Length: 349
Image (cartoon, rainbow, N blue to C red):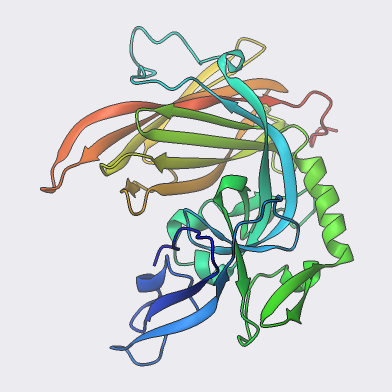
C-alpha cells in the first residue's frame, strides 16, 4: 500500500481496501471501505505521471513519496536549507561533556524549494504518521488548519486523478482554493482568487522561517519552525510573547528498524536564558521506524521570552531486534534551529 516509485511511464495507482476497518488501509491511497467485511477490492484512483523536467506548479496533484498521501500544491516556498555535518555519535544533554547547541554557522546553507500543500483527508485521518504533521497555523482568526503540510520537492510524485471518480479529492479548503474540472480522462485543479489571498498569508507567515536538517548514523531529523503570534503568553510573572510552532520529521535511512524512546530539548536566547525540556517519546507517540515505514512527523509549539532564541537537542532511539528484543539505546542530534523575529508583532503589540 505504499505508493510505488516513479517510472518513465505513467503508472496506474491501485489500492487494496479491506472492508473490516479503515485502519487496515491507513497508508493506502484510501477511498471508502468496501461493504463486504471479508472482501478485498481494487479501485483505480488515477495515474502516477512521468516526473516533470520543470518544477511542480500550484494546482498540481501529487502523491507523497514517503507518506503516501495525495495532495495538491498551494504554494512553492523557496527557502534556505541548513544541513549540519553528519555525525556518528552525539552526546546526551545530560552528559558532563555536553558543550551546548551546535551553532547554525557550522551548517551548509543552500537554496531549496519546499511546497505548501493541502492533503486529502481520507489519506491522513487514520494514519498517525501523516496526520500529526499535517497541520499549520495562519495569521487569521481561524488559527489551526488541518491537512496542510510542507513537502520537500524530492518527495513530490506527480499524479493525476481519474475523471470517473465523483470525489477525486477531499479537503475543507478545496472548493475555496480550486475549481476542479475535467481534462480529458483526468481532473485538473484550477486556482481561484481566494488562493492568492491564502498565499499572501503564507508569505507573511514564513518570512522568519527556514528548514534545518541533521543526520546521526542512519537517522535524519528535519525541523521547520514558523513564527505565530496568536497563541503567545504575553503577561504574567514569566511572559513569553513569542510563539513558534515547528514541524519535526524523523526518517530512518538504514535497513534496521529503530524505535523512538525519548526527547531532550535545549532552548537558549540572547539574554542568557537556558532551559532543558525532556520527555518520553514525542507527542505521546513512540514510533517504530522500519525500512518499509521509515518516516514519522509531528507538529508542536514552543513559547519563548526573546525575539532572538535558538532551540535544538537530541532524540534517543533503540534498535528493534528481530526476536522482539531491543538493542542498546543511541542518541541522535536534533538540528539547532533559529527563532529570530525582531520587529515581529506579538500579542503585547
